[in-house]
Length: 268
Image: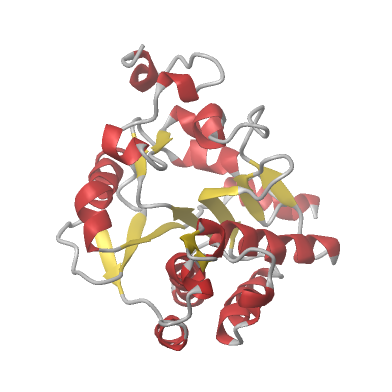
């Protein structure tokens, strides 16, 4: 085991980044995500964009098609209010299963088809604001754990960004379980059906079974609603959740304490 971990540190690591968005999302924030990726990420790391209903026109993103099982899932539940986030006549994101299933479709398809050591999920409203290098990426997922993600105390994780070790022996089992929840419609029986809750259920089960360990990227921000910018990821990334998409950046009030990076200093 020790030798395997040493090998992880010294061997070249192949990274791939995956995201998805629709036409409106591309116009509002997706293009900015790709442009800042192009500016700051290493040229040998590809970004795979699962475009829902358009063809992206940018050289650093590789357009991919969402899988057939997702198309079939969406068709089965096109007229199912609960599966589309309608509860007692009101929209509730916690049950907007069809909408968030696109992220699951993109990630499971990429896991099955891409030749990568580390697969990174990044929401299409992620902005890269400083140079990313492989030394930094290695530090985010140390040898051993299957996943590095943004844990939050008392609730589901923030799933705007996470990293998976594709060579882990449990990787295929976990991807299969995740996908089958949607193929069998078992996902609709869970207490919540958005992607973060469902993903936590899959990971927690694997952890209880002793198949994997996890690593938190939240740092001291486990009790914060915006852990990405308050932990190690904030060094290079911003996440434009909610109204931040319109503002074009997170606000200083989102920070638990001032950060020293130029991006954050400019907004003081």
